[in-house]
Amino acid sequence: MRRTLQIVTAVFLALSAPNALRAQELIDRIAARVENDIILLSDIQDLARYQKLVEGHAESDSQILDRLIDQWIVRNEASAAQYPPPAPEEVDRSLQRLKSSFSSPEEFERRRKLSGLTIEDINRMLASQLYLSNYLDSRFRPSIQIDPKAVETFYQTRVVERAKSQGQEPPTLEAAREYIQEILIQQAINEHTEQWLKESRIRLHVERFLTDGRK
Image 1 (cartoon, rainbow, N blue to C red):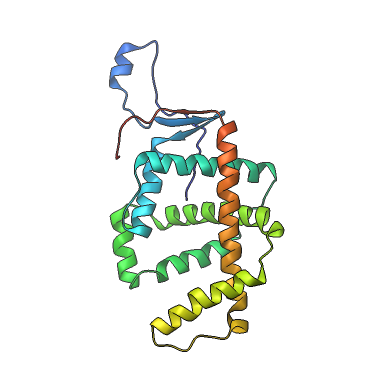
Image 2 (cartoon, helix red, strand yellow):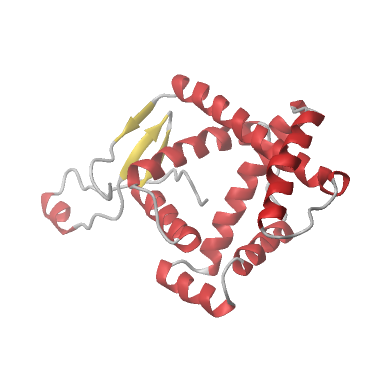
């Protein structure tokens, strides 16, 4: 995702100079205040552009704001824990995976230009995504235990059935076990994360100022 919080002045106002006030341009505005931090409208717009690049469409401004608030919760705890940022090599691998998800390098470039994002913008967002996801993985993975029966059920209902539907020979359970375990671990991490965020939102002081934009 991108920079979720910026501790900057959102609107420049000359309180004691009416002429200057009329001449000033609205640069940005605050979409929400989260505890003592702020989320800017430009943060929402940046994430919308990234979603359009990756998914082909963007969520509503309100939905994106919810995502940015959740990111604030994760980032705040990760920062307090002094969790390290991803290595440049990890960010680069993530960028290469993103590029490979498009039909061709030319298609990636076309979509990137349409989004208005630079490679630097994308790298920044990928670094943010990695930082948050890596932290959540480190926070919840150690406590997750996968039942062997869950692996066997996933194998029979997902792996075998999918292979049969495509007229292919399914891999053996042992060959697929590590892959299946990782999928189930990621599902469990997502479930733990959502429950934790739900509990954290209740304790969070948030003021929302977003009143217009895309619905």
